[in-house]
Image (cartoon, rainbow, N blue to C red):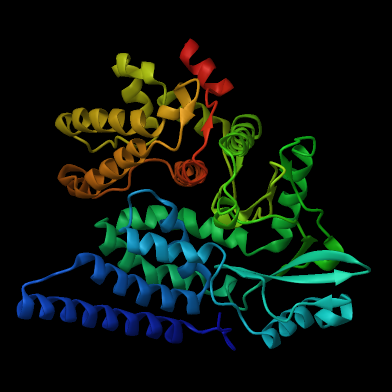
Length: 439
């Protein structure tokens, strides 16, 4: 993959690239409709593929927040056309890397030394590159290290990038400015944290220590002396990314074992620690033939307040359908129902959220769940498309739901997607769901 010799910096330069891409999308549409006029044929899939390629090319050059938003959207079942989801998923671990001279600059700013003044060897080319940074392989005294290096200017460009993508995302999903502010405000906070590698170092040490005894999970050791605000050094974990691992044709027993390990990992984080590794995409995990999962990135961690946690996990209780008064109070507390809603809207939204929660939370309330079942994910896609087109929801023109739920919901979508790719069947009845069902 071709390396970049520089990062586009400055709001005008970055916005200019995005505007140029918009013009290219317009040209793609004109080409598609011209073909329709001349031949009578119109291929939406071809148009989606052309647009997705052009948008991803620009976002991958810009990197940072713009590419991160694309990566997040690629994980949400049913939100994007397949061409966009497949193209944007490349941001998880195979974005175009930056050139070695820029890596040296980052090292000298952090340590006053080049990589080869610290390590015995250091790969000039990145072994992986994503939205916020890229990874290089280093060695020192016979030991291998993974060194994550943040792209220059990523932290400084967050606000400008989010303003840039806001109208595009709003138009793609037909959502209002207030809804976008609600969503992107939470995204901004997580991105600012994600660009602070010292914070990631602390979280990595905390969470890996909490799961140190788990026989199915592996965590690298971290090295504060070789880390800084923009560089994070850890042990090199052997293993394969999801796509590579699945090509080895693992047995169903192995798939289920790995799936169970993932489910339990998230179950304990959320219900015991009230915080979660909120970026469960394939690029953040390494899979081994021994049935272990290496967890290699804790840049995005979401913590919850006890008040939010209690209300959120009460409202998902299937028994709530028979307790309409209590259900309505919870919907109001969590801002799914707003003070200005009229009685007709209240009744409509209560029925709508009952349907949404039943579908999305179905795995919690089964003894086990088969995530290889395509009908379940088709149901999620149909529901997602229905919500995007819902006239009453759109007419309300207000952000609904707590900001705390944005990353928790995204985490579950990402987890479901991983389990679906594994074709895993896992025991999903959590301790929490048992407690909820008892009330």
